[in-house]
Length: 311
Image (tube, rainbow, N blue to C red; front, side, top):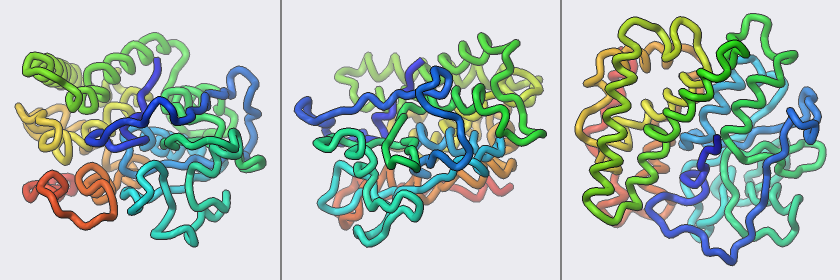
C-alpha cells in the first residue's frame, strides 16, 4: 500500500511540479536491513498541517518512540518566493536544532547534490549523515509499528498485532482509498460525474464506519490499531477543511454520532491531541503561503467551530 504524500509536497490547488524536476527514491526500510534500528539515530521532519505526516508523529508518541526518534516541525505556510520547499522559520537564520538545516531540501541534497525537486513531509533523516532516507508515510507507519518493538514503551498498545495483520492492512487500504485520498482526488475532477462518484464514495464509507463503531471503541473492536491513527487525521480535517474547500458537504463529522464520539475520544488521548494543530491546518490549507491574503479562495471560513472538540 502506498500513501500519496503529494498534498504535503505542493498545495493541491496549485500546479504540480514539472517532469524536469529531479525526484528521489527515498524508500529505505528497517525491515530489509537497509536502515539500522538505533536509538537517537533518526529525526522525523513533519508538518502539523499534513494528513500524511501527522499519523507518524502520533504513532511515535503513542508508542513511546518519541524518546528515541526525535522530531522537527516545518512551518505550515510556504515562504514568499520559496514555493518548493519546507522551512523552519521566517528566514534561513532559523534552523532545525539537530540537523542544522534551514530548509528540508538540504537533507535531500545530502543524497543527491543536484536535487531541485520538492521535498515532502514526512521525511525521516539519518542524523549521522544528514541524509533523507524515507519520505513514505505508509512505510514509516508500518515499520515503526512492527520493527521497533524493542524500543516501544512496555505499556504501549500493539497497533499492528501480527494475528490481525491482514485485517489491519485491509482496513488501512479502505481508509486510504475511500477517505484519505478523496479530498486530493476531488480537486482534480473534470466533470460533475467524477465529483459525484468521489463524494458518494467518501460519504458511503463514513456511514459504513459510523455503523462499525456503533458497538465498538475502535474500528477493529476494543484494541486501538494503526487504522485508527490513519482515520483520525482525516476526521480532524473534515469539518475544518474538506467540508468547505473540497465540497464534501453533504454532512459534517458531528452528524455521525458514533464517528464523532470516536474522534473526540481519540482526541482526548495525549498522543492525538498533542499532534493536532488546528491553527496550522487552517493556515496551510487556506492561506497556503506567507503572502498577504488578497483573494477569496485564501480566506479562512468564518463558521469553523473548534470549541466542540473541547466539550
